[in-house]
Image (cartoon, rainbow, N blue to C red; front, top):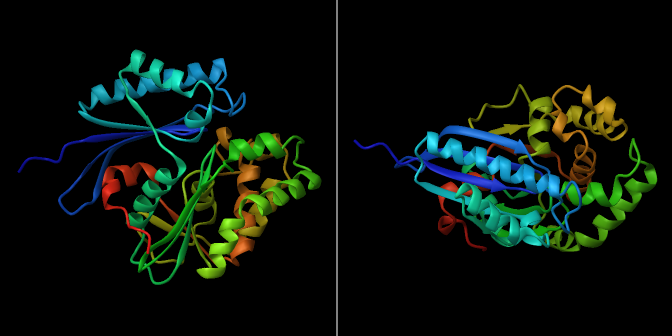
Length: 310
């Protein structure tokens, strides 16, 4: 029997470039053969325009991914550009130069399309749903929220509140000041009104996080007593308060010494933790699950199969 063809998915995020090479079997299961992330930080000089240094870092990362694709002899490649590339004034220039230098053709997608991919990926990673969940995917340039249940997907929306955006707008002191936290929360109060409204209609206390800071939380707070699952992880919330305050009250140097936090995330993880805390308090969350799957897996599994809104 012929083995399934390998496919490559490249996610060009505002903070991180990812590549996933895998096949999909006849039962729709993902079989991963290679995964890598490179912290490019496209928005390190601002999200309005990609600076010269991050521009070069991005092209170098894609050249490396092109070498990996050739090594694995992958014929089908999907490269997706998200918030930074779709909003930066020179995003299209980056896309053209990337294709010229690496042969990788990048497709820019809007936030709602991104949320559809995330929905498909996350739902595939979870056990069968037994109630409503709020999915949250924190990126560098945007954050996606999705409300779903065993009936299907009720609502999804992308908001321009990625960690690179929030860090640049609100985290200027080290450690972050109480005034900056108040300003950040006031901003979230304003921009997340649609989320507040939908939670009144579809309340849920179960948050499902995907990627980024949620991966860090899964490493530190994984509930050892929970029933194991191959592609999702239940958090032990007893340690969440302590972890939150340890991160938010720390300096950059102190965060480097906190086990489980990659050095590349120490600058952005403060605003990410504050965004998660805001969401937890807004929805009265009492259960958090972390999904191993997000947008890349959603692309592999096919956007045409994504759940429609119900």
